[in-house]
Image (cartoon, rainbow, N blue to C red; front, side, top):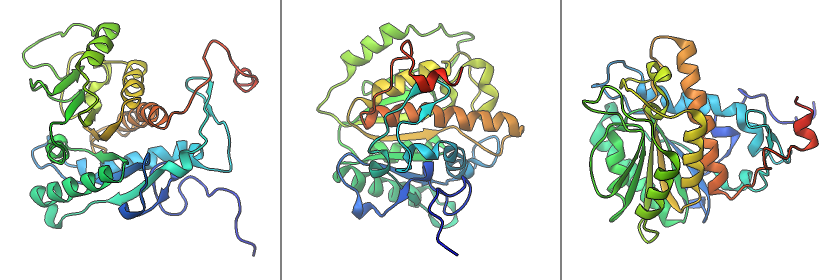
Length: 294
């Protein structure tokens, strides 16, 4: 029987993020995006299951796997109804697999994560960390000196080196809707190019109607378009690491959980496209491919 030359079905073969190639840290090059899973079970969370987040995000990402397949060119983002120029995605996106520590030990996993992120950054690559618990992000920050931290969602903590976007409010019943142009301008003033830039992207960044997705309840938030715009803007900067947090695939309600996974992966694509310099056709000037979808 001849070997199969067509792409594998979505769920066949080794599971990697967006069906990307797998490689060790030593093989990374400048400009690469290195996906790294951190399956840690935070026993302080209301529901067990955060250790399953990395696998769940990979499973959802395979629906976008053809973006990274060199046999395809100029795929269409059917949500945005735009052509996507993805030349080079297959070469620069890779999956390093999961970190693992014995007996779910937080300190051991934190040490492994800090070392891995530093090694990835030393090779000029960006870490894309798939995690559930936000308790390990401090290990990422400890890998860099005087780093700036952008936080989309998650718990609010005041610090000069942090820029908050739709944080979980503490003590407020209804936080004001964020002024996006003003926030983007504030971010540009806050950002210092000489310092490493780290990003925490928490599921709680999304709007109130979707708050049931998260272990941490919230009021207020952003819609998918706004989150994607933020990640696209941030991706145009030399980010050293971005970590996804807040997803617990084991929460009650399978349909709700799947929505959360898709929201995070869809928004993350905006970061990936921007980080690799991909250009999308203007939405108000549709191509013939776009028109075929109407």
